[in-house]
Every structure is written in structure tokens, then in C-alpha cells.
Image (cartoon, rainbow, N blue to C red; front, side, top):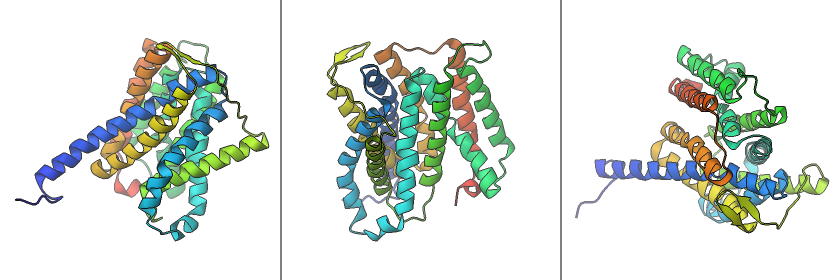
Length: 317
């Protein structure tokens, strides 16, 4: 019997195929969160309560596998306490809170597309912080994304848009950019699953503390949640938010990144936008206007160009 190794074409193809499947599963699961959350918000939940439920449930699901991955190396948690605090507070809780506040004030698709300009913000950060001047290709991608953002917001036609919704979506974009910067740091010794679970646990604790202090309103409701496809009990979208759009999404995304590499995995992750638009249509009846659809395509094209323009030298240290 022939023993397969990781260097054989069969194994490489198997890993690539499974990686693509996992990446699509992760992106699809993440894309479901906005539509599910909007239904809860319209049923009386506060954004803080929806985010706390999502992050808390995901933390409960992932803490076990994370402890296995940690393998008793408790000193890693102490050494990276500030990293986990920043990751949980900004990249996890802060980013999701901003995104849910955005979808409470505007359509899911435009809110997510604004958030997806985060790679451009990362380029600006690397330029200002590390003097990594972007090349022409990266600048062209940033320009494409900028034009797309104007079209997504329908500013050319003078459409009425929610200033608060845009501000929250931009805040989510900054949180996502911070997530990319922190996730790219490989010298902390933390396994990816431990970093994800640690951020979820920290984010949950920070949200609960903010809720007790009255900084973040935590208003839960038990009323049925109405979607275009039908009405469901409140616990159905809550479980889906925590287990599907967070725990499964994070786990599948981490596994996909290990099989595909960070660059290819990040390209496949762009399908989250398509999934979010599809779920917003199926569950909420939301469809972007034609000009917004064109803007969305420009944003995605710009992000792809920015990513293609990346080089090892532009990775954050």
C-alpha cells in the first residue's frame, strides 16, 4: 500500500479542494449574520444584546477546541494578554457592534460593502506606520474601491442616506482593518484557534461589563422574529448567529487559511458579500439599486487589485 505524504499531488489537490469548500462555508456563514441580526433588531433587541449573544455563544462553542490547541501552554495567554484584550475589544466586539448598528440604519449590502474597504485602510496604515509606500497597482485598487464606495452610497444621485449608518459602517471597516493587522502578526505564538476563541471570550466579557455599566444597552426580547420567508421563535436566529455565523464561520475560515494560504483564502472570503446580498434578499427583501450594484462590483474589484498588489514586504511587523 502506498503511503501518501503532504508532498504528493493527490494530497495537495485534496487539501486545496477541502480548503476551497471550507472557505466558501466560512464566507457564507459570515454573510448570514447581517440579515439575521436585522430581524432581531426589528423584534426589539438592542445591537449590544445581539452582538453579546452572537459572541458569547461562539465563545462557548470554541473554548473547548481552543484549550486542546493550547496544549497547556498557559504562559502564551499571559504573554499576549494585551493582544487578546485589543483583539476582543476592537476586532471582535467593537467591529461587530458597529456593523450591527450600521445594518439597523441602512441596508445590509451597502453596510457590508463599506466594511469591505478595510484592505484599503490597512494599506494606508502600513504607509503611515511603517513607511511601506503602496505601488501603482495598490493605489489603482484603492481608487477603484473609492469610486465604488461613492456609487454604493449613491452620492452622485443625491440620494438620502443615513449619516449615522455610514459612520457605523466606517467604524466597522476600521475594526475589520485592525482585525487584519492583528491576524497578520505571527510572532505571538498563539495558535489561530486560540486567538479566535480568546478574542471571543474577551469580547463577551467586555460587552457584558459595558452592559452592566450602562455604556452598551443590553435589551433582549422574546417576541417572534419576522423575516420575508416566515416567522420564527427568537432563539432560532440567536442560535444561528452564535453557532453558524460565528463559531462555524471562524473555525472553517481558520481551517481554510491553513490549507489555502492567507492570500487565496482572503480572495475566496470575498464571496461573503454575495452571500450577504443573497440572504438580505431572501430574509429581508432587500435588493441594492443598480448603481449600488455597480459600486459593489467596483469595490470588490478594487479589493482584489489591492490584494494582488501586496508583497511580503507590506506585511505588518
